[in-house]
Length: 185
Image 1 (spheres, rainbow, N blue to C red):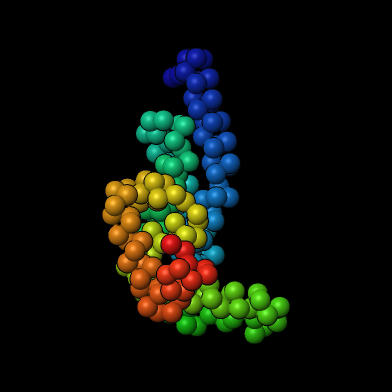
Image 2: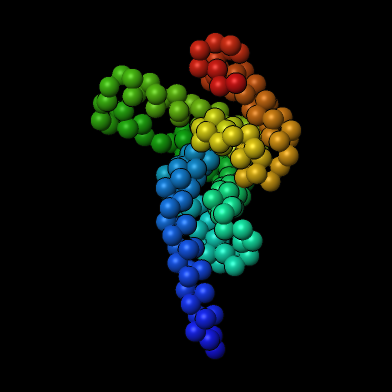
């Protein structure tokens, strides 16, 4: 049985954990959406990630680094999800009904959505690490250091994955040529 000091510390620890999870949840949800390109799958990845985080919270050595630790958990969960579900994601993209056909929207919104869907299809053709590095860096806006930390890779390895992803997406016509407007590099 816990004494009152230990109980107070446990409650304080739980309160900190819950506060951090509540604060980071919107960013983690956006990250999951960018990584798996499907709203429902992103919620599943996030829920599993949060469950992992709650279970493994006592293993967290530095609560000041909790946000990076949580991003890493989401990235690893998304990575596992993409490996298991790659085939079904491609089928879902092919069979998905375009909302623009159901409810017309302004031309710009349709064009942007079409480009994002094409980019999603392009990312699904890349190796998982390349797609993940590209999504984290250019869609989530993480720094190279943060991407390396989230993927548990060296910065040089992340650069290689980014370079290969950008080259492949350019070859597919999904990114402009180097130096052109809209070039992410």
